[in-house]
Image 1 (cartoon, rainbow, N blue to C red):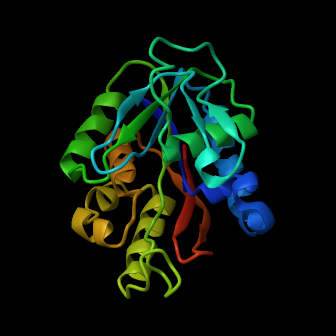
Image 2 (spheres, rainbow, N blue to C red):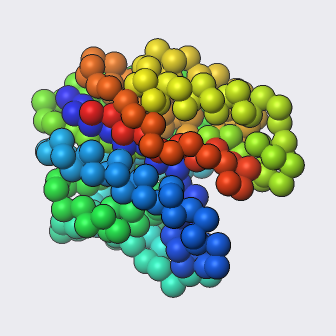
Image 3 (cartoon, rainbow, N blue to C red):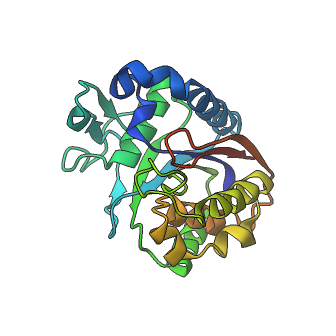
Length: 239
């Protein structure tokens, strides 16, 4: 059963070495992510599952101990998923970017409260498949917590990666409202086509959360809501 969830954005700029001189601009977002992870730790889960976007098709499960890096962004920063021993298969692949950011957050907060595993979700995965996968996870007997990674729209300003789209602000506002209220039906109802057009890579992971939380009766808190680079970054905690 799902006992808690944290929702965080996944830009590599969260890592100060990547952001370099611009690092202070996301200090508030980092602090909010730390607070959200504190909610996960307080729930004392038996297992933490990190869910994040991983390209159009997704890349499936990543066992504890899988490594990632930010070398592609000019930063000599390497990360490892979880603090426990490496599970079989951990050396076979590298973490996708969203899960590497999650691993960095977990290392930053000293996570050692439960075993960790990762799941790379396809950004084009249909909503019903996302919801079904989340429900299957929550249907297990153990106490599970989710760390859900993903950005909102990338079209909030003319300098945004996707340029300015007038629909972006409204889309992000609805997601923020749903995350603040732990509104499962609203997350399930997000338009996958619109999310793709707005480059909102968090849509599939959020709908995975919706499936996992459907019977959990959790309440939500919105900890951060901003678009400093024209990309919507949202942080929420459910418990």
